[in-house]
Length: 143
Image 1 (cartoon, one colour):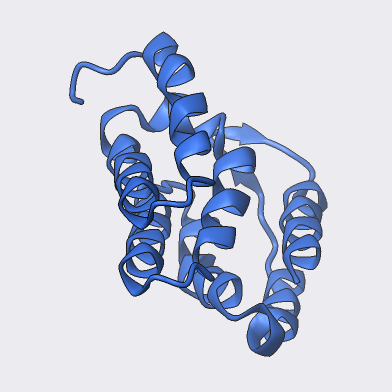
Image 2: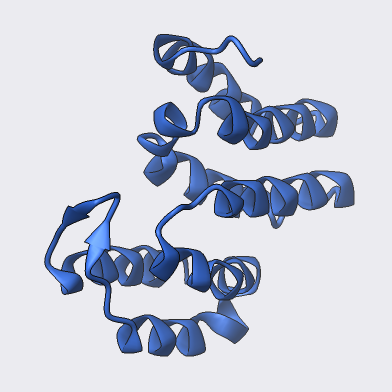
């Protein structure tokens, strides 16, 4: 896994995403665990795929098998742990709670997101509202 390159991520990702939809819980669990481990080996490459990966992992949180649910929670925490932007990193625990239980925690999380002001994303300056609106849109879609 430590030798996984950017093109390698693009080759492996479709199979892992398909594994998340498999009926066998061990296949789902294995796919989730590999996705979680990939953030440490190829964070830059995987970060480009997060808009696809995070919603799928969010769906797996509601799987009927507790080991699949646990693996999904761990993978989302692993993804959150490699975020370098301090404004977003501070929000990760709140976002993870909202993803795990959207009915109960989405509104407080959205309120927190709206209070945040972000100035820099990955070293590039952007409009503060743009990233918040993307996060808000994703959380609203999940709930």
